[in-house]
Length: 601
Picture 1 (cartoon, rainbow, N blue to C red):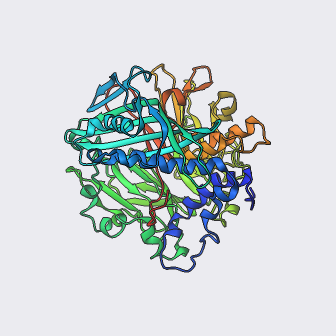
Picture 2 (spheres, rainbow, N blue to C red; picture 1 turned 90 degrees about the horizontal axis):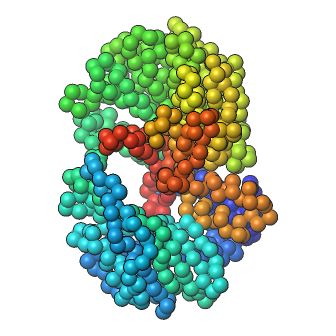
Picture 3 (cartoon, rainbow, N blue to C red; picture 1 turned 90 degrees about the vertical axis):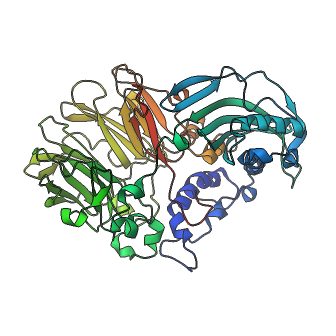
C-alpha cells in the first residue's frame, strides 16, 4: 500500500495500519537513546504519517481535541477528594447538561469467588445535571464508591465520531479503577458525548453526556486482586533469574550482537509440563538469540530450580516456541523446541535429562507448535505454525498481500510421527496445504463436530482463518461455509463449550484499535469503495471474536452480545473456570513491548 503525500483516504489507512505496525515493531529500536542510527531503524519520523492537520481530516482533528478534553474530565476521578468545579473551565458549553454518569438502581448480576458485578436495570431517567456545578455533582456520584481511596486511575478511549449540524458526537470507553481497604473497584462505561463544533483554533466544548452502558466490578479478596505476582518469589533464588530473566528485551538489544538472531519483538513462548515425573508442573522458557533457554523444576514448596544445563536444554538459538509431550509413548514428557532454524526433538529419561534424537528444518519463522493424534494411530503428530515466508524475512515489517486476506505468508507443516523419533511431512497428503501460505500465529485442535477425530482451527494475521475439518485423517478447509473466516489480525485461538450444549465453541484473539474503529467508520474513509470493502477494514480494528457452535457444522458470531470483543491488543487467550462455578471464563493476554519511551503503545 502506497503512503501518499497529500491528504487522501489511503494515507489514513496507512496511519491506522502501517503506523500501528511501524510504531510497535520499532518501539524498542526507537527507544534507544543517544544513538545516531541503528541497523533497521526507521528512516523517517513515524509521527510524520500521523498528522490529521496536514491530511485535512477535520474529523480526526476534532477527535484528538475532544479526547484531550475528555481526559481532563475523567482525570479528576484520579483524586476524588480534590474535585472542584473550576477543573471544568474551558471544557463545557453554556448549554451543557447530563444525566447520571453512575446510574441509580444498580443490582447484582453476579456474586461469587470474591467478585461482585453490578449493572443498572435501566440507563434512562434520573436527575438532570446542568453546568459546571451539575457536572461536579454527577462526577462525585460516580466517584462515591471509592471516595475514601487515596487515588484512582481513570482512562478514556474514543472510538467513534459522527458529525451533525453545528455539533458532533463521540463514543468513548471510560474506565476507572481504585484500590479500596477491603478490595478494589472497576467501573466500565460507554459515554456518548455531544460537542459544539469550535471556531478555528479553539477547542470543542462539551454539550452533554449520555450513558449507553455501565458496569461495576468489585473484588473483595485481600488487596483487591484475584491473582498475586509471584514470579520473583518462585524463581528469584536462581542466579539465572537475576542475571537474565528479570531483564526485558530492550536490555539485551543493546548488549548482544544482532548476528545471534535477536528478535526485538520478543515473540518468545514457554511450555509447561511435568519434566521429572514428580507430579508437579515445571516450566521451559524460550529465549532470544544468544540467551540460553531455561528449564525450571518446581519444588514442593512452590519455588523452582534452574536445571537447564544439567537437563541439556539450554540452547542459545532464537527460540519462539516449545512443547512438552510424550512422543515415544514411554510415559514421560519429551520436549520439542523450535530453535531457529531447526525443530529439535528431545527424549526425556523420566528424570528431566534430555537427549537430542532428531532435528528437522520446519521453516524459518516458526511461531508455535501444537500436537494431536490426528490419524488415530496412537502416537502424537505435530502441526508447525510458520508466520512468514523465508523470502520475506529480509524486511523488518511483513508485506501481507492483500492486507485483509493475505496468502503470501509461511507454509505450515503437519509432521506425521512414524515412531522411533522419525517424522515425515504429511501436510499435502492430509489436505492441509489448502490455503496454507498465510501469516499463522497459532492453531488449536478440537473435535468440533463430535465425530471422534480432531479438527484444526488456524489463527492467521492479516486476514482469513482456517477451520480444517478432519474426515478420517483427511482435512478440508470449511471456514467460509462454517462462518469462521473471521478476517482480522488472528493471533490466538481457544475452545470451550461456553453454553454447555455439548458442542465446542471457539474464541479468537485479534486486535482492538480505537483509532482504527473511529477512522474506518467515517464517510471520508475510502469513499469510492463499496460498503463490503469498507467493512473489511472496520473488521480489522473491531477486536476479539466468540463463535457459538450451532451443532450442524456452522457457527454464530455472538461477540457483541457476549461483550467479549474489547480485549485490546490481544495475543492469546484461554478458557478456564476461574471461580469454580461450572462456567468457562476467558483470560486474554494483551499489550505490547513496553519501551523506555513513555509514548509507546
